[in-house]
Amino acid sequence: MTLEKHLYYAQSFSLAVHARPLFKDDFEAWTWGPVIPKVWKRYRGSAPIPERRISLFSPTRPLDPDDSTRDFVLDVIGLFSRLTAFQLSKATHIEEPWKNARDGYGPDERCSETIDQESMCNYYAGLIEDGENVLSRRGLLSDLPTPTWGWLYIAGVCSRGMVMHPFYVHGLSLWGAKSRLSEPQGQQPEYDRAMFAPPSEDELAEMETYHSSDEFLAAVGART
Image (cartoon, rainbow, N blue to C red; front, side, top):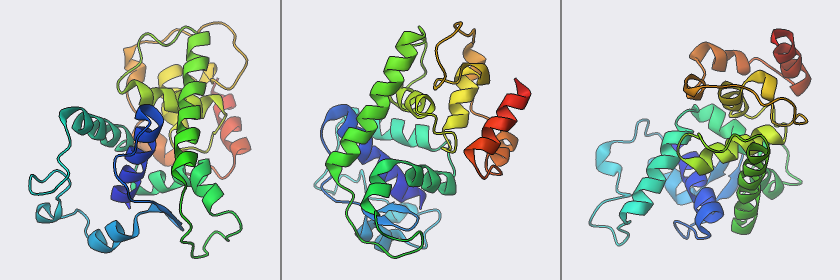
């Protein structure tokens, strides 16, 4: 499941950041999130995937990505490796491209609808733009960790108040609970590089226990 989600986000942010797809295959809106059926068939049951079956960057393949493409893919993997497989699935369930493709289907109903690439491009480009706008208004653009587009995406998640999104807590760890980016601008918060660290395993486990946005916000409010 992790492989499928990393491929999905690599494709989505290639479309959003570079205005071009990494590969031609389409994703389908399966129950646990976006899936390329032929990739699922090839690698299902492989956790971890044996090295002999990994051929994405093999020199024998027709596709031989340049250094910038390799770096971009590694940036995607580095950012989204902060989340577990189930958190990755949860993230795609909260975001619009998967939800829109499954419109009319039940939560556990089988679906093979294609997730439109234009929808992916527009949605993630919109989150990046929202993140850039809100951080710019607060003067917080200068010291973002890399990849910049990734943290702008996380800022966009925070600015839209997507409190059940797994990356929302990462936004809190960077900008602080008192500077939730969805709130009206107030006094600029002070922060340091230590806030760039991802949350602990205990914090992530606690995040998973919340069942609603009201419950989460009440818990955050009680600590501030």
